[in-house]
Image (cartoon, rainbow, N blue to C red):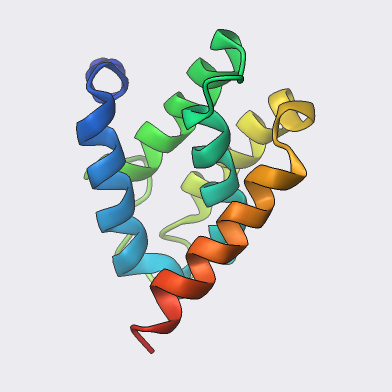
Length: 116
C-alpha cells in the first residue's frame, strides 16, 4: 500500500512508468484501451479529485513492479491488474468521457502500431 501511495505522489514518474510499461505489454492485455482512457481521465484537469485518486490508485497498481499476481505469468499475470482497473472504472465510469476514450484509441493506434 505504501508503494501505491508513493507512486501517486510523483505524477511525472507515474506517467513515465505508465507509458513504459504499457509499451512493453500493450499487445498482451485486452484492457489496454480502458487503461489508457482511465489514464487520460486521471490527467484531465476537469476530473474531480476523488475520481483522480481512484484512477491513479489503479494505474499505480498497474505500474508497480511487484503486485499480487506476477505479470510474467502467461494468461493470468494481468488478471489482478484488470480486476483493479475494472473496480476503479465501475466506481467512476461517468467521469471517463468519449473524449478520453477517443484519445486512448488514437494513442494506442499511433504509438503501438509502429512497434508491430
